[in-house]
Length: 500
Image (cartoon, rainbow, N blue to C red; front, side, top):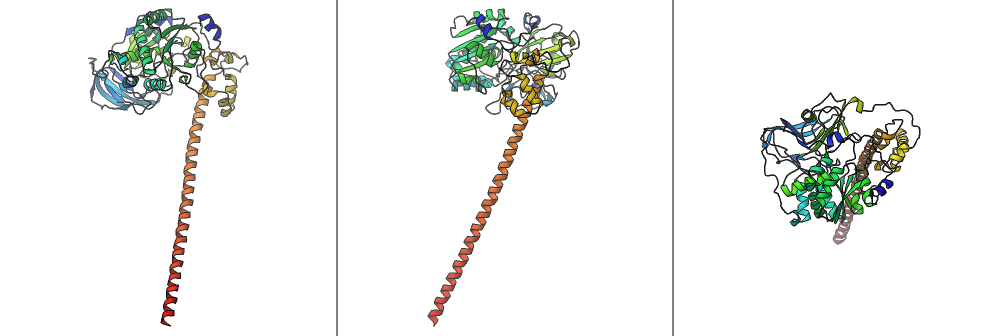
């Protein structure tokens, strides 16, 4: 399928007039000097938080395990550099609420001394798929495109469901962000090798790498790196937000639609990000855990926008100090402007899924008061999931959450396309977030109610059983007494007859 056919088939989403990528994308990759301290969160992935295996006052080395995974869906955490554990406690979470979450704080010693965390392996293809998955798990690798689902159980799922195709996401459709673009330009060989290793781990026979057509340098570098590997195809896709969403990328590259409520693996496809593949290469080939990543630092307030290789757990204020600020930011965002998280302040650590930090000026922020919906239908045309945002919002405003669910609330990506094109500036995405939270809360309440009802029913059944058992025991005792009395009477009669 050519680019023209792809463009003709893509009628959802939006295409921002200025994607703001070039100020950062064309600057050479920089390596951030080590700060004085790092705050490494214990929960920077989907699933259970990691459990600390170090104590305050203990010295750790770069790559050393500092928190172990808990359960099958979790990921370990490693020290990004050498130093002393100064605290294990709460820091501000990367969330608009500013609520705390657990982290391990390391006072760095500046030596960056490495430990023997994982053993490198020169030939990953001599390992079994299970061994490759175990190495991915030990390295703490999660989806680096933002989803942060642990990569090892995802690979195991692909093998279990007989996945035949890997979709490698190089779309990076969010404005301002270019960390994946930078990675593909300078480390394309690592990405392609990671794709090959992941194919071995999942049993996939081919891989399709989708890169938006506004990244010609990355596309050229990836094509050079993929030469000689016929099973790996580099395919440009339209620069259309949210092309980086797994369902949209799968549909564009394969022509298949993922059923509602199902995983992509259900149709034989597994999606991974290019940064995840590069991390898999470094973990398996070099024995390097995931303790650093490329982060885009961009926005009108940034003096030197660009892409920075930074340790995970670095505070946003230290990252901004490295690139410099032209003015105080009006808003800080972790991620992109469409789906990113507004930060309460700069004393927040980066996490594994952090692909960008935006320091935006007042001119870059749209704060317009909403007005009444004019029923233009723009939100319907833009929705990549084919939903009716206006109807969803109306049901939500009326408190009809069951009807909103019936209209596909769970399928909403919260991508923000509907709000972006809305001429009335209706806060559609906020209402969807609210509704999803309300539905989740009601589901939890229903579970608690059913659990309580089950306990009450179990208690009633137990009391009834105990009452029956008591009644049966009393009846048995009564019968036994009657039998004893009858036996005694019979015995007395027999004795009286004998004496006569």
